[in-house]
Amino acid sequence: MVKGSKKEESKIQSASGIDSDVLQRIIERDSPELNTMLDEYLEAMNTIQLKLKPVLERVGDSVAPGNSDDNKLATKDGMSFLEMKYNLMLTYCQMINFYMLLKLEGKDV
Image (cartoon, helix red, strand yellow):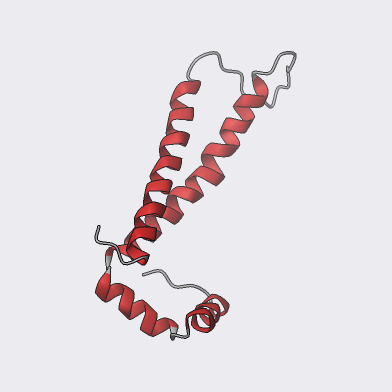
């Protein structure tokens, strides 16, 4: 179950006019998969931002002409797998976002 801080919960309550506990029960009743999907989304975004993106930036900087910094990764081959994983994770997050948007709009999915 995804629970935010007290500040986030008060924002939800003031914005929607519904108590956050009541809102959580409604979500669990109507779309119990949303909590799981939100957890997966947050985990994937964390992986993208904290693991994949820094490595891609480091590798991308190292292949620039004239760059001989010892701290950079020098690769000739193998970039395609890392870029593919990065793009796949971004696409996965976009699909989860779209699904959650449809569910929040009340569409049948």
